[in-house]
Structure formats: structure tokens, C-alpha cells
Length: 183
Image (cartoon, rainbow, N blue to C red; front, side, top):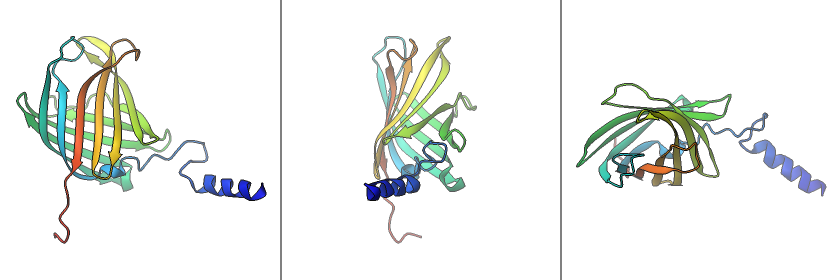
């Protein structure tokens, strides 16, 4: 029994949990740094009853700052509905142990409302309220199915406070293989 208590204490003391009981998530996005091919499947007119989807293909480049506590995402995709150029700045808050995700696209030229959240059990969930079609709606961003060479992202809107969700943006990323020995 005494050995079990010491083993448990050793695990707790060396785990990423912090003194305040919150998990240190400052490296949750480390898997993503580098260059990716991106396929986006986007609902053309969310929250209208539309079922018309458009597809885009291109690249995503992730740059790391502050030992992983911040990074910038460059998105450049094109498809039959046009081109999307976007930038996301992700910042880790060491007090709340959460990330804020701040997105801007080249058509608007300003950051929107940040989504805020964290990873639990390999799944990242981030939320905010935004105005869409003249009304405030709940927005959810989810990262899942993360491997060293792929990742899945979905954005969904809820017009009823989270009782139901309409997925409107699905991104599948595949890591671009780095050439070994390249300088």
C-alpha cells in the first residue's frame, strides 16, 4: 500500500498538472508546427437551411513562437468558390491554461472574436459568440483525430445556445514531408 501511494505521488508530481489543479496545455498545438496540405469542405450558406458545400485545396503553414506558447497559422486555399487567405494567431494564457484563437482573412483585414478553449484527452474544443446573419450565435471549433502526419478540424454554429450544431467548415490537414538533408 505504501509503495502504491509513493508511486501515485511520483506520477502526480511529474505530470503536466499544475499546483492549482489545472493542466499545463502550453504545448497542445506542438503536433501542428510545420507545413501541411489542406482540404477544406465549407457549407456555403450556414444557418439558412442550405446543403450546398464547396471545396478548397491548398496549404497551411504553422510558425512557432515563445517556446510553443504562441504560433501563427497561414492558410492559403483555392477552389471553385474562390480563394481564402487567412491568418490565425494562437496564444496560450498561462493563468487560465487556455488558448485564444484569433482569425483574420484577407477580405476583412481584421481579427474577429477569439475562440477560447483547451485540449482534453487529445481533443481541442474552443468557443465564442459571434454575429452571423444579424444574430448572435454560439461558435464551436474542434480539433480531433490528431496524428504526427494528419489532423482534423471542424467549425460548427449553434443558433439555439448549444442544443444543436450545424457543422459548416471541415478541414483535413496532411503533413508535407520534409526532405532529409535539405539545407
